[in-house]
Length: 373
Image (cartoon, rainbow, N blue to C red; front, side, top):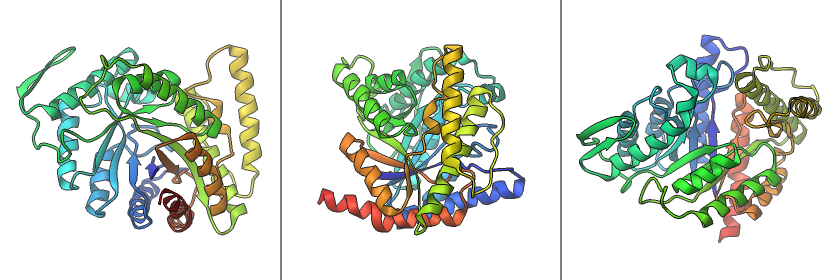
């Protein structure tokens, strides 16, 4: 089982100065993650989602981190793939260049970037996001596998070569953001790894593992995007671990409350997120938010995802290292391939993020490494 961290570059009440600091803080956390034995970092790509994610140019962030590390894998979690955001050839070129510079440590996840806010910034049409994301994956993987490449689909490319060639042969591992069962099934059919949300807790992750595995077992191979198949499931694990376990719970649930409100704002037209005071009962507030959301969704008879009740579930790896170990034991029993720690949430102070990384590196990760012998 692998261990990773994901970065959104979230912050409350952003100013240019706070924004610059949070990005520097994310770099510091990523470097510390390597020192503490994490296997991978992931960086999102979002555009114009104020407070929720200030990580707009993740290829620059990841390159900066790669230059300051030696071992840890460097993951795009994810690249927004519809053509309005970036041409598939440019995605292939940038990722290959980074793979060369970091010595073959790159992973590439694909996403749709389908919030109204992001699509409006780039002139992307909602109906194009799904088909173009899949086509971009096929283009990128083909471009890396073929010395001279051309493509004739909804766009025409080449013939030409992607330069430089990636270090990983034939290409870096491919992944997809999966927040719903249908995207999990799609990832399995395409033969790429799944990056799944884990806010709803271990039972939801267990269901998603089952959906993914069943789709893998049922696939015929006709829709594979590459000759290289990657059946890797990474599950989100929100976590804050401190010596003061009660404060860790307060900080973790406060951060998750901010995260949940941010998702509701940008994906579901909810009010802007707020920071709230540390000493509030954020777990109770999350429970209230969950009940209100369920009532509203059921009354309107609309599906919960992507603005789902899972983001309001507070039962995660918040507290002591023993609490985190117990939660990860559940994920291990489910059979997740990777535990993707969400530590950098908008209200969590840097010192708590850094201590959480240290606690995982000194206590949580070694516990599971020892089990693997």
